Length: 323
Image 1 (cartoon, rainbow, N blue to C red):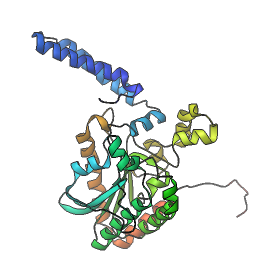
Image 2: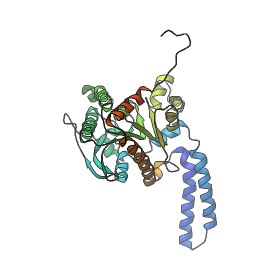
Image 3: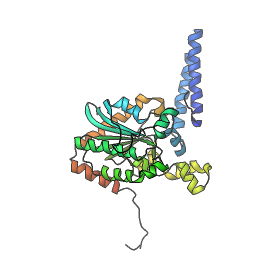
Image 4: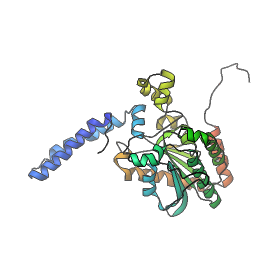
């Protein structure tokens, strides 16, 4: 059964009424096309009004929608000849991060991404999309292979964050993420990163250093979840929507702050309503950015990536402050 968010209920009710009228028309042989047309017009108006005025917290809810396409869904629609690679060659095969060789428009690439599950069994296997150190070390192994083979890297992010458990600490998750950050700055191949759902803190950044960072319209990217921020600053879960506003985590905020390079549009109502259209729009953006990056020399790609991240977090000092 499809999940319906609170703010989607009015729209879903209208869509159900249209389906009921169509079923009634088929069953009774009655022409109700005029009524259907009126309802469809109202649905379009409702969609425009609803999804053009979403709050940051509502965007977060869409980013977490359980029916939203995950990285693997984009793998299936955008790439061919996908050959998944497993394990970090040190400890285990963490299913919270998946990846391998594939072809995009016939050209070989390396793809990787954080991965959630559609049901409890899959979520347990993928740790609800929260990677352990071995997940980041697997991602690093794949990226090193890509750099050696001179293949572009496309990284998909959809995680609430790295796994914060004792096992992750014992196996040095912070170090694993830090090493990935260091190494991703040095790879000479094109790297395109796409935030397709949740972009949570260092867990996202561990596979998020790229020449281009794209974000889907209803995805978010933040140093902390709104719930975590509300707990720390307000000590009240009721302040979660206020925290989402303060964090400036939506795609439009991130583009304005120059933390992402492009906002990729989604089908009206969100990517969960039309996987194929969402993949098509993302594919067009990937195609364009990969072509631009392939035209640069390896040294230019490394320098561009470095300068891009060094320019983030611009601040100003008060007049008269000492150097």
